Image 1 (spheres, rainbow, N blue to C red):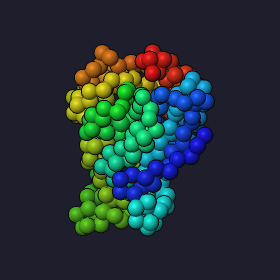
Image 2 (tube, helix red, strand yellow):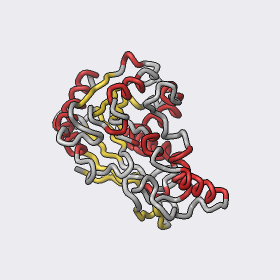
Image 3 (cartoon, rainbow, N blue to C red):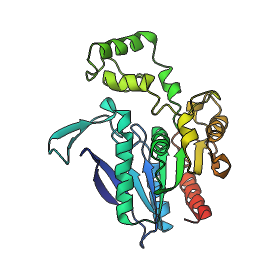
Image 4 (cartoon, helix red, strand yellow):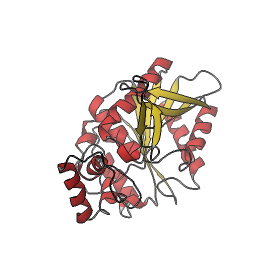
Length: 285
C-alpha cells in the first residue's frame, strides 16, 4: 500500500491509499468513500484492494473531505491551516474532490479508469458524472447508494426551523447545538445542505423522485447492494432497480445483489471484492 496526499484545485489536501498491482496496471478503480466511510468503519476496502491488486488492477481508496468528522490539514496553495470534515462539508466541492483523483489517475497513464463510490460516495459519483460527463471514466461502480431522505426524515420541524433561522441570521458557519440525525456534529450551512440541497439527494425509493442527475449520465457500469440494506425501506432490490431505470444506458448496466448483508457488506467483504474483480474481467478491463 502507498499513502497518497492529493491536493485539489483550491489546495485542500485529500488522503488516499493506492493498492498497486505487482506489474504495471492498465486499469485503476477509484473508490470514493461515503460519510465517515473510512478504512476503520468499512474494512471491505482492504478486501477490494488486495483482490484487485492480485488480479493486476490498481485500486485507489479515495477519501473526500467527509471521511472523518474533523481533520486539520495545511492547504497546499496557501500553506495555511485548514479544518475539513463532515462537520463543515460543502457538497458543491464534490466536483473539485473527484476531479483531483481523476487528474491523478490520468497523470499515471492508466488506460481505463473505473470510478466507484460507496454510500454517499456513490451519490457523489452520480453528481460528478452528471455535471462533467468525464470522458476519462470508462465505467462506474455504485455500491449501496445512499437514500438521503431516509436520514433527513429523522430531523423534526423544530430542528429544521432552528437551522433555517441560523442561516437567515448569517450564522451558517456556526456549529449546531445538537447533532444532526443524532450522530453528526455539523455547521448550520452543512446541515441545511443535507436537508434541502438536491446535489447529493439524487437517488430515491420513490418512483417519482428527482432522478434528473442520473438521467443525464451517458456512462454505463454496475450497481451493487446488500439484500439487507436498511436505507431502502425494506426493498433494496426495488431501490436499485428504480435507480437503474432512470439511466440512459440502463440495459448496459449490471445489477448485483449481495445476499444476507447490509449497507457495509459485513461478513461478505470478500464476496463483494470477488464480484468487482469478475465485473472488470467481464468488461475486458
